[in-house]
Amino acid sequence: MKRILVTNDDGITTTGIARLAGAMADLGEVTIVAPDREMSAISHALTLMRPLRVKEVQPRWFAVGGTPTDCVYLGINKFIDGPVDLVVSGINRGANLAQDIHYSGTVAGAVEGRILGIAAIAFSQILGGDHGALDRAAEFARELARQVLDAAELGERPLLNVNFPPAKAKGVKLTHLGTRHYIDSLHERADDNGDRYFWIEGSSVHYEQAKDTDCQVAEEGYISVTPLQLDLSDYHERDAMHSWPMFMEPD
Ligand code: MN
Image (cartoon, rainbow, N blue to C red; front, top):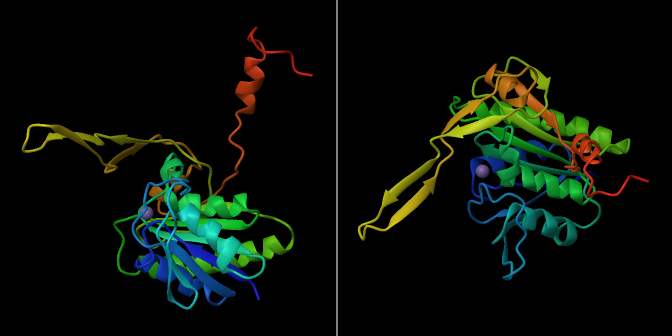
């Protein structure tokens, strides 16, 4: 029996996580460990400075007063007996494309699974779709999870970031991360006392057109599947910087 941990960053009461958990139920024993409130854009935060409260809202559904990373850490180390075969995160309300992954709590949940040595997938549904969008996303999530579990049996530990287009997908494409910029995302206002305050909003987005990127492929109406890795080292820059006099020669 495969053990599957489901988390998200939109909170345990959202439709997205319910649909994802439902899709995983055919594949093994599902345990949901998710934040008790919305934690979008919390990135990979781990709660160290206050206690984490947990409520088992129904069997195998744990609501945590913490972040997606807290949830995966607790799930794997405490609530699930035996090794976990797969961590899935989502289905997020909204895209997690390009640099979004650095802010995303959804992606962080999957990354935490991978850090702990487990295959992991983050799922995000781009907004603006019809009522069937989540059904289609959940069905695809099941098929991809099935294949990742097969790959995990052979020793692979993929970390995948999946984005669903709003409309019925034309197909599925493997991608790499693109480049996106948020436009007019910082708003300055004043309160009744005349004190200024700011809102950061991720509403208007421009992306650089480039073949086979997650942004481009999703825009064209395909499901984007981006394999990620934990190693953020820039090997090219490292090699270039060897000529700087302050650094010792490589051995
Ligand atoms: Mn979210």
